Length: 210
Image (cartoon, rainbow, N blue to C red; front, side, top):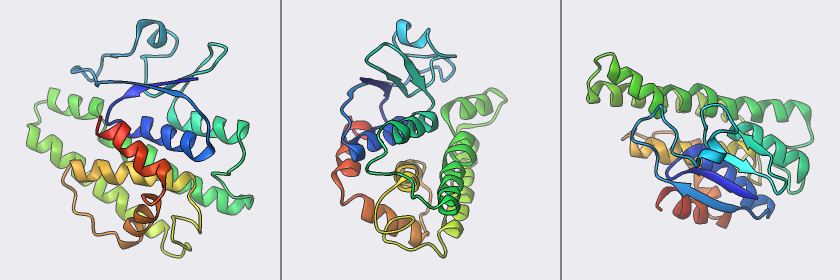
């Protein structure tokens, strides 16, 4: 398998963490993000196979292309169920999915490069665009902190990492890049527990610092 994505892309990092946690090998093919946020920098043969060439893209051995980090994570959980990213209890699975969706759908999507580029195109200054991003991240992390209020640790939901941690750790790294003040003790504790594991700290170096 081949994982195509961009350097410093949190969605690509999520998939890479999941692959590492499950012990599934995939060649990592990273590229610098395109200067134009609306244009893909992925190979033509890959980008042509999915709408607008979103990142990341997982190319399977038979040539099929999977895209959208959430969909890829769910596919990995179905094909390689152990170690599990979601617990057996349906209610807890729903709580974890809600937390993950808060990060991926309600936080990241408000400040991704395409959104910020459109803000600038409407006349917003760089400072205003950055301020928008910081506000979106802060509000999302406040919601995430509340969602973990009664959840056992040391990870987001219990004594082992899962889907929620896979979403949280990359988002906190991105928050730091935007200069967000991180005053979220429960989130930071889960991040610290995650970063003791190779699946998180090794992929941090490879994906974010390449």
